[in-house]
Length: 206
Image 1 (cartoon, rainbow, N blue to C red):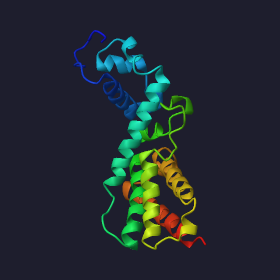
Image 2 (tube, rainbow, N blue to C red):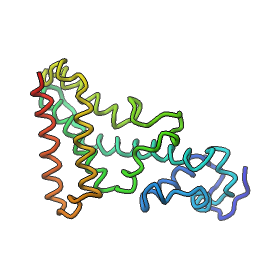
Image 3 (cartoon, rainbow, N blue to C red):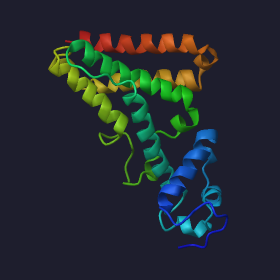
Image 4 (cartoon, helix red, strand yellow):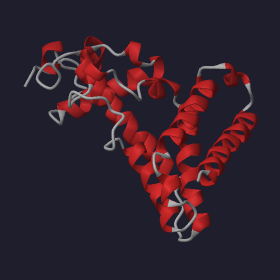
């Protein structure tokens, strides 16, 4: 193990400590703020120690993106309702959409790192896959709508993509685009209207 420099790292899980330090940097400055040198300095190890866990900065960025996705999923689950029936199923889909947007509004630095570049992915692919926790929750919410009779199987086909496109586009407008100048209540009202419109839209498809 590399010699400890500042005392901030105490022989624990170095990989997790590096990711946590990367999350702290990205949270403030976005993906461009991520630096292996700064991360290892924060953890208190030599820069060479990071290469035991990440081949380069891109590898660390990929791990940070995965951690960001986990945190977004947690934000969605805070809004995730229990219950059965059509209204509960719609509420779960609403929770996914509004949770996604709220995360982007409150954590713009992390949101900017949500999709790591393809060459930054730990598994060599992009993070827009069925393994990404927010995507899993979206598909579960849509499937529960079918089970509850709120969405037909035909309408369910491919519905995740218009849902994701709508909320992701609004999230960008609200976090870094022209809607960022609106007040919190105004943003929240428009976010809910966007989510409700896409839910109505997919339910109306034949």
